Image 1 (spheres, helix red, strand yellow):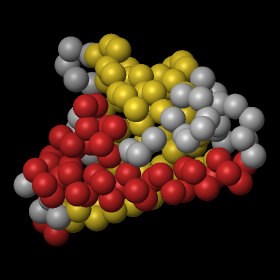
Image 2 (tube, one colour; image 1 turned 30 degrees about the horizontal axis):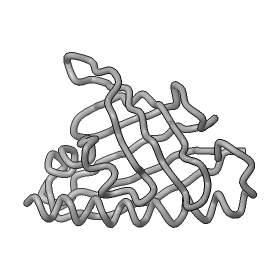
Image 3 (cartoon, one colour; image 1 turned 135 degrees about the vertical axis):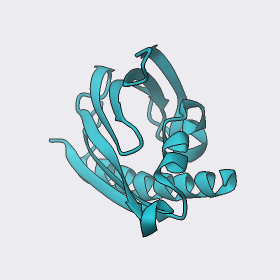
Image 4 (cartoon, one colour; image 1 turned 60 degrees about the horizontal axis):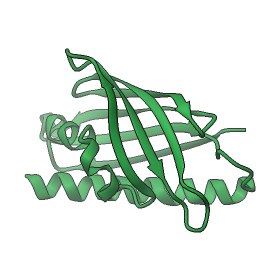
Length: 147
């Protein structure tokens, strides 16, 4: 059964500034502790979508490959869903909500994901619930560093 994971963070930057960091595949491993690599496999020439491959690791467990399509509505929303790889369920979205007249942004994250191999549900939940707040804090740090 996939777990629903939610998180949010407010960032003192415009949605456009947050968007630029959020879609930067190369920054992924710096912002998500368990992410080893992010690679764009295919891209819409107009920038409306892309297909990405993530290779993740979780301590002594084997590396996991996930492939997903992200559909873009800049700078407001990214919807993603699994297209391949070992993760059986992976879908969700990022929403960027302008605050303070557009000078700040609330980032909302929501996903459903399931572990690719037999991991007890409480452990899988613990890993995901730990990673999302860390990734949101890293997103805020990266956006602020670029401002």
